[in-house]
Image (cartoon, rainbow, N blue to C red; front, side, top):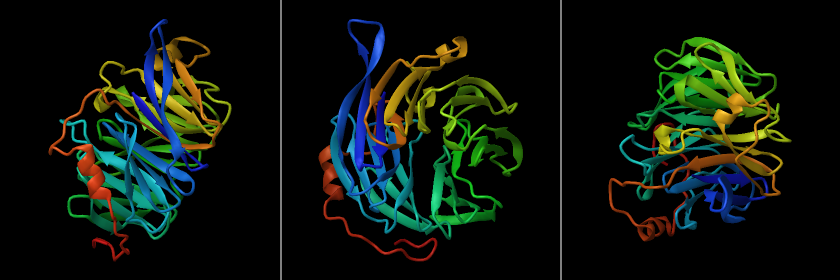
Amino acid sequence: MSLVAGSNERFIWGFKLKPVTTEQSLTLAPLFSYPSHQSAILSAAAAGPIAASGSSDDTIHLYDLPSAASLGSLYQHTASVTALSFFTPASLSFPRNLISADAEGYVCIFDADPFVHLKTVRAHKKRINDLAVHPSGKLALSVGRDDCLAMLNLVRGRRSFYCRLGKEASLVRYGLDAEKFFMATEEKVGVHETEDAKLVTELQCPNRVLCAAPGENGLLFTGGEDKNITAWDTKTGKVAYCIEDAHKSRVKGIVVLTKSNGGVDDPYLLASASSDGVVRVWDVRNSMKEEKANPLAEASTNARLTCLAGSSIKSFKRTRATSQEDQTAALKNPKRKSHSTSGEES
């Protein structure tokens, strides 16, 4: 399991979860840490051997996790990159597409092998807060500061649905089975049917929700200003269990290593990052049994962390043979392009 954390101080942090040879325990071994951007990192994503970070410097930076090397940057955005998401087909562990969103309401679609810009879509009138890609890779949902929810057709590269929510949603996620999706507005998380967006139930959190990640068996893990990591049963709307005081400060990122993202050997691991700079890894089985759960491993970055992403990189397959050198060559001499109208390539 590899983790990538971004910070306000422009630094990207990479960690590898490794067993300690002398003991039956785990440690977060550092992979890399350096200022990969010119300003604060706002978003991160990881899939297979690839990770990406988005910044308020309007760029996306790419990383090769097995070699802990930089793959270069993407320059299609002209505003802060606020959200990132990879699409990986179920039969592969190397991503096929990278989807990114920015503070001007645009979404960019990239081919991930190699990284080539395909399309730019105007999804919102204001800043996009978050986006989520459907497991099929054909659709994506986004929420923004225009208090709206948008659905994007990733096959045709255009917006197919747009509706006003009445409140600003800060976060959107699909469940692992894609039958439901989740939207967070302040302290509430709405559970919706994917087919018709019908509200099934609401999860009432004690404080503002800042991050969330779906788990197995209909669970949703949330973290935020209450400093806890809460596992919700989305079928009943009740708390399944909670890691209380998981961090000393706000929880800014959660990664659940599930069977669907390649972690077959370690399906019970959860990682979290806090704004105080600490990254921790938990075994959720211990959290269900113990009153006070202890992390399996932790690392301190001494930075104000803003986001967290994770990936299992034990093995991966590609649809086309593309080496790291090919990826790097494709990113050289990038051309910045101006945005056009919705549904048109920029």
